[in-house]
Amino acid sequence: MNRPMRLRRTSLTVPGTSHKMHVKAGTLDVDEVILDLEDSVAPSAKDAARHQVVVSLREGVLGTRTRAVRINDATTAWSLRDVITVVEGAGAHLDVVVLPKVEEPGQVRWLDQVLTGLETELGLAPGRIGVEAQIEGPGGILGLPGIAAASSRMEALDFGPGDFCAAMGIPVLGVGEVTQGPDPLDHFRLQILTAARRYGLHAIDGPTGNIADVDGCARAAARARALGFDGKWVIHPRQIDPVNAAFSPSQADVHRAERILKAYDAALRDPSGARAVLQLDGEMIDEANRRLATATALAGRRLGMTRSAASAPLTG
Ligand code: COA
Ligand code: MG
Image (cartoon, rainbow, N blue to C red; front, side, top):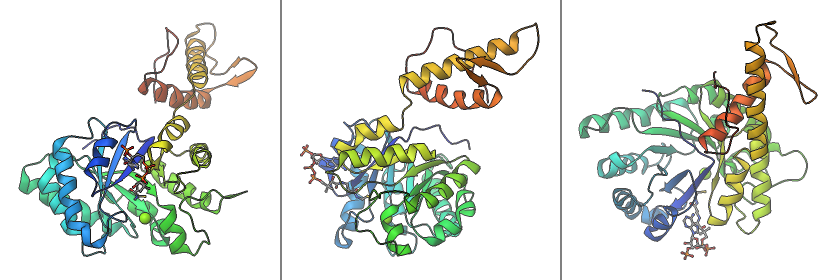
């Protein structure tokens, strides 16, 4: 089954227990909402949270945003019941399951099989529910290619910086803390990005825990975007606008990309000589520029941004 093309500039996490916050999430400008059954839910509230998530999904409060649920990790006593309750209760209203603390490909395969069993039993479209694997420990990093390829349901690799620092002994106290100078986590982000690109998945950065420091969150988002990431988790409404902005191309970049594509397309069509290289505003433009410009133009078109009237066709 071909996975749908989704946007994931912002993935808002919301505690599974709070109906009020689920309703609010459905009014916010985010691409995805992740209703959480894991770390934001106390052990004593796991069952109540599952049922609240089912109710909210069935009510449709998240509207057209991608509807995700983060279950507990595969080694816990909660994860199986999480999947069964949510898919039995609201499987037709669920787009993605987020599996945290993935340390080996077998954990993704386990989730895949449970989902397949439930879809078959319940008469749901087979394979429709996607999976995001959260990478939060050394096994997750070392197993990246296997995890990325473990299931045709895989849609994204999500970095979990808080648990990752805890698992690795990296001395920080805040989640997604912005460091001065080179960020030691960027090394791992790039490994995640590489596996994501190799297997055609989204690479999504984790949240910035300091919700008072909006500028710090914006800087972290810009940095993740510069590395090549597709989006970032957000945990509070005030983080949404800067993160959406960081993962959207600027209007100037969209215009420039469209201009490159148009000029390159015209050069290739020029009957006087099939030279696949030209100069535009002092810059050499060749096939690599076309590929780069295609990514930006495609992002701009998907977001409905303004473009020049006669744009070149997008290929590859
Ligand atoms: N989703 C939806 N709404 C949210 C929200 C979220 N993640 N975080 C805050 N809000 C809402 C609040 O309910 C409040 O709504 P209201 O004005 O209609 O009453 C408004 O935004 C302002 O919130 P504020 O008072 O500043 O924060 P808070 O003290 O209510 O909540 C947190 C702070 C950190 C507890 C909350 O942001 C949160 O739970 N975030 C997600 C945590 C999570 O999912 N963690 C696990 C994954 S990393
Ligand atoms: Mg975590």
